[in-house]
Length: 577
Image 1 (cartoon, one colour):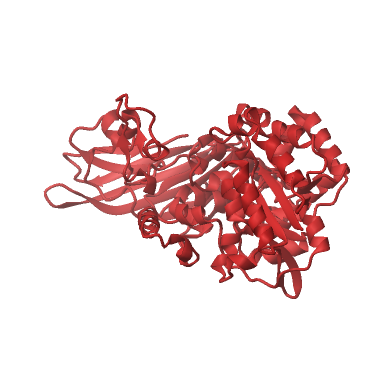
Image 2 (cartoon, rainbow, N blue to C red):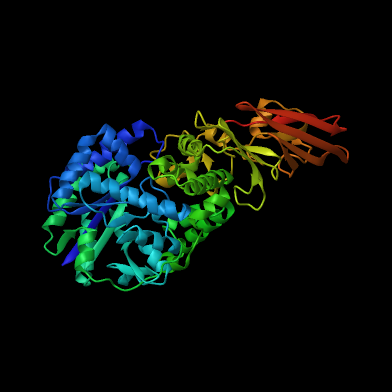
């Protein structure tokens, strides 16, 4: 008998637009549940993230009620994650445990069932999280089979679950079958059935799939394919007719079957993440290398030896993500020291939602409403701390101190090592960071972009679509040479207007914008000074001093420039979200 473990993961990030939640609900989440409810013998597992469950409770409580009925009937098993869907390896250990326990309590309260399994956000695995998972009472997690292959396992051995351990305590890990993940629901049902039959013929005891629920209705073309053309209904009916297949939940399988052995997995995620997390030039080389292996027909057999970057690389690629992340860890430590309760930390947990900290094939960090939501929650959490700060500390963990100022009304961060710039200017009362901006960067998928042609030559292939953009989009592809911060000091010659500033086509002659400033702190003011120069017919010595003072619920800035700056235009750059 081949046991079929079928599961879906459904997620909408904190701060996403309500109409997107609603569209996903109507086209995917509701349609899927209504369909499977007609087949009580089809057992499956499901994970819904905290932001989505909270939204469902408010907007569609009948969905939660119906899901609860299927759970009580034994058809459905619910998995958890960190409640607000953080990448567990990216948040402090005490927050990992708290988020998991919060999710467990929520499920127990709503569905009267203790969850055993955990969906690992973005399948980001790090050995350091094992202890946290065990401490939280998690019995099993799911990762891609690629994780196991990267550890040296053979694909033929990955039909079952394995045990890993930390200090002698064990945790079960299920490897998700990539083949099933790629053909379900995108290919005809016969392909899945043929694959299941092959597994059965080869003596395998289980087929494992757990993938995005949005693939069932939201991904391009899937609503028509899965529901209007009846793929899901026909798929379930076909599976239930197979006499050698039995659907099961993951917990049932865990209870009934023994593990295949032990495993120690390396830090990893799914294969595509290893491409996205590389630095742009290296990512472009990575894609070329993979394409070369595919053209030679040797990619699949060598895939296990190909490793790109890890998720934490995003905190190096994007200084903006790192600043948000380090502010999150800073506030977390402050809350831990103050002994705040779990309920008092909910805003912090919401701010740990992963989407705005990275960027892959979807918007992520590039979506301003997601960054804004994270900052808003961080500032709500910070306001609860109350304590005023006027100090120097290495907040972003780059080995150079920043100036961190917190009053009752605002938070101000200055970075002396980078032009004495303002890296955060936040209103605690409005829970808004006015400095939440993003530098325009080269991304590896920009390489090879072409302007679309308006010729009527049929329907373009997906490959043509992915590499063509409008002329307006191509014109907007501009790269900044410095970060989009505030209080950046320029000396410019030649024509300079709004077009030149936007397109970064002005002539910079000073060495102040991204260079270090000396600083001193006194009372409620910061004095920043740089002995630099401008380069017009050789170098001219220039000194720039700026005093930043806290006045009521705002700041004042005073400048003093000394030296011969004739022939240049002095400009102070501000960028606001």
